[in-house]
Length: 272
Image 1 (cartoon, rainbow, N blue to C red):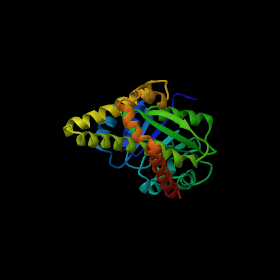
Image 2 (image 1 turned 180 degrees about the vertical axis):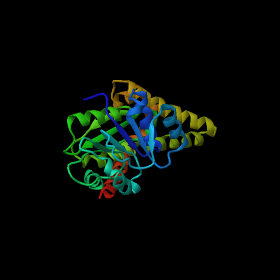
Image 3 (image 1 turned 90 degrees about the vertical axis):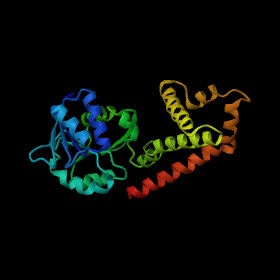
Image 4 (image 1 turned 60 degrees about the horizontal axis):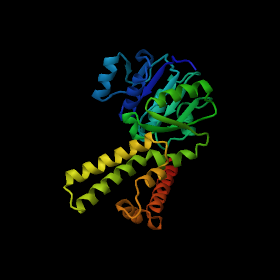
């Protein structure tokens, strides 16, 4: 795989901005990057200006990047794809970060034919370069193109690849929507702390720091989550008392099963 390849980012919102920041930090040359967006937010425009990145408000004539990342909302994906389809050349691999847009829909939206397309599901920790993205290629993606896409996605966190597109619905339910579950856990912990007598601001700080700190420990430790849980649970102690409620009759496990199943079903509905 060549370390030098041209790159177009279509859509300069939160996810697009996170990706651009990661690419620049990873050493991708600004002169190889083109931003296509009619009205990027001020912070994005500042990043573009500071780094001398080319900016276009729409598709560029006689320009076909090696990689075209489409980072727009699913609701406008169809219109955006038809607009940038002329930029897809024989060497271009198109990458979507939108939920619910299938490989087939991406292929059709870009004009049909033997177009290399990768469907991905990132998550919001990509904003701090701690995301995880799962990618699924169509049959036209080459090993070289896969390597290029892997490098770009790796700039915002971990990357995993799957060959079965149907798995993306489950991925969406677990990691795509997953950060919201963790944020809600922090909300619930804070509310329970208030109910136990803590001042609201202290309860929220304790919940936020505990959730983020435990996540960092889990990220750094080679131990499984189950082992880490066991390590902090003394027999007949306070943690064991709390876990007897959360784990009693598999209460939390069953609730999470239902939540993941609901999210997966909705993802399947959105994908058509």
